Length: 274
Image (cartoon, rainbow, N blue to C red; front, side):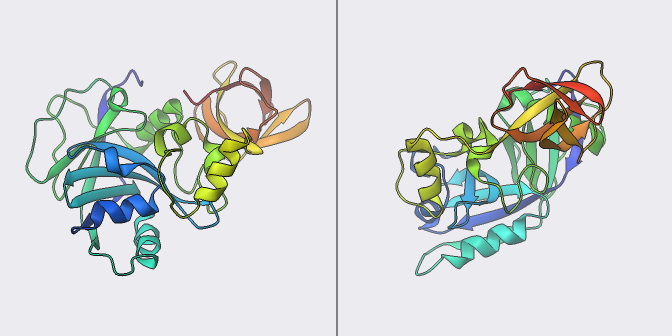
């Protein structure tokens, strides 16, 4: 977890799925097993295209038996709504984009008190990394200092958590995202769009040609987003996000954790996501 504690306004798109079929419909569309998620808790899931490509990495919060909040990286919401509406046929569930804001709280911040109309959702790998406050008018916790987007981006890279438009594009498959698959996929639930590719790779014990990894420069020199990652002069991947001497990169599966690589002349070490 990040050693710094702060809050920052975060770009998140929030949607409400409500109605008697809300849970069952999302169960048929998302990669996570939502049938076992208790009301009042949160889980991560992939929303996939029928081809198995990632449409979005979604956080689902169950606020009632027939009401689920979905939130995604800012700018991804309209595509999520369109994708969910595409398969909503004879389903008693409404999908509504909400005019909500998000406050990201990171580090060792106190647990927020329950507030009407505000949802506190654990961040990234869990509450050890902080939480997000989602609502029409969320208020940051007292005694926690405000920071800017750069601090949030650095914490995300430190956590090894992928972002839409950076690590996740319309060509990404779940198997490229390493441990995120464990957090977002159930291998025991029923059918959902895109499941065939996920299950086929799992049953064969196959790994994707590229894997998301963290990079750390050897001497703290900054790494650059978009830069090529090389081994002995051979291109093995590309940096997708960077903050100072830390970065995320998609690299070939032959590049093991602990490998020494070069990024625009800067020596770096390959680290696992967690």
